[in-house]
Image (cartoon, rainbow, N blue to C red):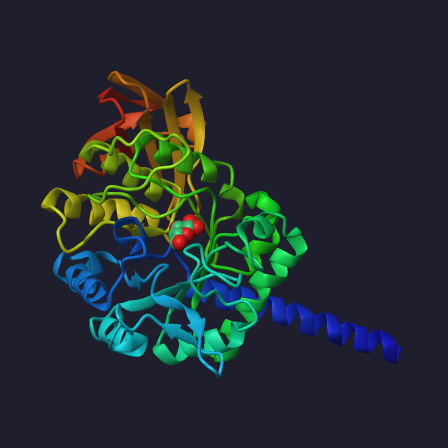
Length: 407
Ligand code: GAL
């Protein structure tokens, strides 16, 4: 009897623990995180002046008011050394005022501060990683006012090769360890990871959903149409996992990135056109991807601001129901994607991946709706009227996606 009661108490305790963990996760990332990350445009050449200028531009461009909040400094802010007490040594040439001052500046603009590390001895740029110093690092982040950690997977414990061969269970422990260290600080910190346990991202499911707020679904994005499509594909089957508290991350946005990127894996170096940037943004909104811009916000053109701040598209991405859109039809290169929204509404993407213009029709029964439906075009910001049974998007341009709100 006593044994049964204590077992019952233990079960209740574990259940409560699990529930409170889920609640905490949901509170930190109830909708896909929005912000900017330094990697796509600055690579490892980050500095406090550049980051402050980006934070200023996030405000003056209207991006902050559109919902972007995190300013994330990726790899390159640290040296490859620790001091005698085990604290990571910040690169003082790049960040002469230190990370706390940078955090204060970012917060003074009403934004949040993000930082990068990796569970191995070294980051992907062979700078100091968190291995063996996880709690010291987490405490330092908290004391600098960090609100977001991107925790990559490179050189674990010591080299890239070892990282590829790390058993999935050890990899899981490494991610859970930093989760616990962040929690111990008492500061809410969004936890974004890129875990290729034993060389495979699929080895991180399903446990990763309860450990982190966002998880990379593929290799690095590039400012390249085919590469962007590869990243979209990497997340397309993962929709059952997404929801408030956990988001699949097909990688950062390349919209408006003017930096010439290093290319590997034989990828064509052609940059995307403005129309392709728009489609890239549309599809990231459809699949409830984190919207982490990667372009130089200080120098972007107005047409790029227009894409990044399309409020109607952002509302699709940020919808409170938190459903990741899925592909419901694939006629070769003509596709229909649907994202269920709150209040019985749907966002539908009619996506033309071909090199010629095309008409694309979707039927109500494919979406699971019936009767009269109002249709609105979220790029033209125009009501198209009321329709029954089906709607046809006419003459959709090559690589364009018509994004419709159906209610
Ligand atoms: C890669 C990661 C990139 C960037 C880079 C920094 O592994 O996918 O997004 O963070 O490391 O070295």
